[in-house]
Image (cartoon, rainbow, N blue to C red; front, side):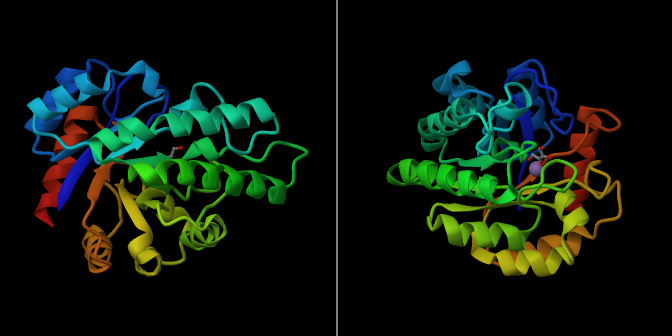
Length: 267
Ligand code: LER
Ligand code: MN
């Protein structure tokens, strides 16, 4: 099992990003705890120096399996489904701008809250149309570079758009691009899926990335999810990507990261 953990390159508000602050110090700690990779949360690729990132990650022998983009929504309000055409266009352009960075690291680009939330007065159907168009445009731009996008089903308290694997697979049909798949997150699945294992099985080779947090979004082992069964089911699909820790810094970021890897390796 290849394990990674989420690290933000810049300070951000999202509470389940455990590590914030001094980038290289955090990379060194993450490598020291035994992780194989680091998932980078990057609000805007223009804020980072890709060669510098590669150098620091490489120095500590960490792979970058995925790049998170949700801060563009959290900090700037960019969204594929906004009722403001400028915000929609800006979201699409921002997501396309991740392509060279993702190609350099051979990382999947995560689409979480950048999909947005249906604004008041707009129909769900209209949001879905905007979403499909945005995903088709981004996927087409990324395909020649071998870059893949993974949309993450999120729980109902975060968005009205795409809660489950079933919703995600319908969306995949509508988008019709081979480089578009899903990121499954056990925290969201615990809230929305009828059966976590059955949904993982159904999603099969469309699982492009995987987030782990326990039922309470604390580090795996601190809640009541059955990770042994969940991970067995995941690997039975043939998934050979990273299992990436995205959980709250409880009791603190360092202890959480250490407890998570110890628990997951112990399985
Ligand atoms: C991001 O990966 C995530 O899981 C969401 O909760 C962000 O809103
Ligand atoms: Mn997640």
